[in-house]
Structure formats: C-alpha cells, structure tokens
Length: 198
Image 1 (cartoon, rainbow, N blue to C red):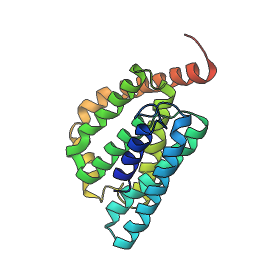
Image 2 (image 1 turned 180 degrees about the vertical axis):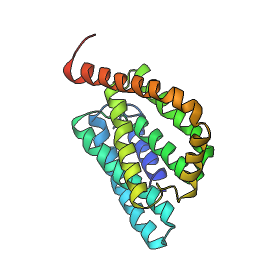
Image 3 (image 1 turned 90 degrees about the vertical axis):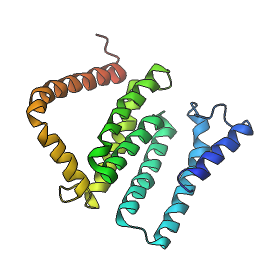
C-alpha cells in the first residue's frame, strides 16, 4: 500500500491534473513533488511495518527500499538518474534473496531494462549504470548487515552451489566476460565524464 499503491495513485492524480506531462515523469524537475510524496508514504509505511512486527526478511527488503528511495531522490535534485534501472535491480536482488536459484533469471532483466531506457533515449548510459550501482550497493549492504548475504542463508547457499556446479564452464567464460565489462565501464566513464571520443 505505502510502497506502491499510494505512490502510483498519486502520480496518476498529478498526471490527470496536468501537473506532470508523462506517467513515466521524464522531466527531472517534474519528479521532485512526486518523489517527496513517495518518500513520505514509504516512511509512513515503515512505522506501520514496525508496529506489525514483521519477519526479519520483510523488514530487510523494506529497509532497502527505505534507504534506496531517498538516495536516488537526492541524486535526482542534481542529475537525472534512471529509476527504471534502480527498480529492476532492486526487484532482481530481492527475488534472489527470497526465492534462491529459481530467481536467477531475473538478473537478465537488469541489462534488458537498462538497454531499453537508452534505446528509448530516456536516459544516458551513465544514468542507467548509476541507477543500477546505487541500489546494488544499498541492497548488498543491507542484506549483508541483516545476515541474508551469507552462505548460511539457504537462498545464497543455493545460488552458490548453482555457480559451483557450473564452475568448469564459468572458469572459461568469466575472465573474458569480466574484462569486457571492465572495458565497457571504462569506455562509458571516459565518454560521459571526460568527453573522450574513440
């Protein structure tokens, strides 16, 4: 209710009233009022969640959202970060922690959504990478502190064993994949921030 329904209905209300020009809110300046209301809604939901005394996993998931939303909101004041990239990364990480190896396919949505935002010219590559990075760091930190990012936790243990069982193939693929990712990040960084043309 507080993390999804209230924010979505408020955005729809602003759109119907003509306060925002697009439901995806592409304009950075138009995002500020919706973000303020969404942050207040999420904070209100947090206090209700505490009152209900939820399981530690649910509280951890909500904590990621509670910390991630203000972080991307602050960035939005100065720069247009990709919310789509942020939310799909959050979705994927949460599903991995909650459902284990059966959610490994959700990782594929991260580059797909990122590519679509760039292809639709809604965001630059740097804005997409920033959205993914911010929420990935927050998610991993929260899940580590709350104890869900250890091999003692069944979902992480399942994911670890899945990778171990395919380690002979990964040993061949990962070095090349890692090198290519490094050079892609380097290329994007130099092009976006230093305007270097190759």
